[in-house]
Image (cartoon, rainbow, N blue to C red; front, top):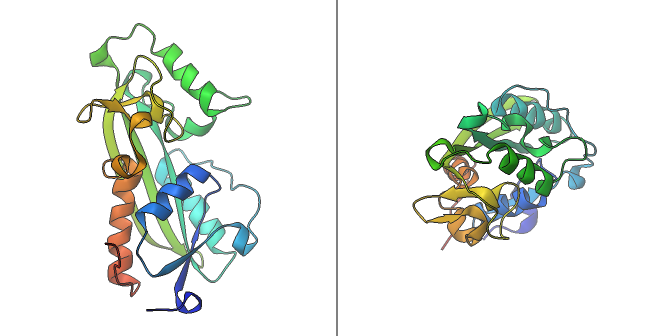
Length: 210
């Protein structure tokens, strides 16, 4: 078994605690050491001026990869609602600006979707991952999951828009699902599975997951 000091290191370029938990959970069992932005002296936020999730994920991954010698994994994700022409989209985290919070964002979406019949409430979560090293993109992975905007907020698990994202196969919102269940079908879980396979094949890692 590799010692902690000999493990390859990867920087997780997000300050969102919910995203960090999901990423670490999905990568559990890999003999890799995951560092935070704080571990490499990263501070402040990279301006997300892209018009797509891929553009924003690349901006963050490339910017933070220049701060250390380690490969850097960044992601951008959000909710796209058909009735709102794809909004909130890349503005998902700050949709209720100024002073955006998860609760305010949810209230805004529910208000905009008021009286919209069920067939018109289709939506999807999208996650884009980008792995970079010293200013060069190594790998990109995308995941998405389709669902509906619930009529009301349900569940207190997860984060972001999870309590209003209804996943028909389970008959529940993501906010009602246990993390280990949600990660099997979520946008981030699907993208991370692809990235996990890449790390296993190309980073010399052995899968120790049981």
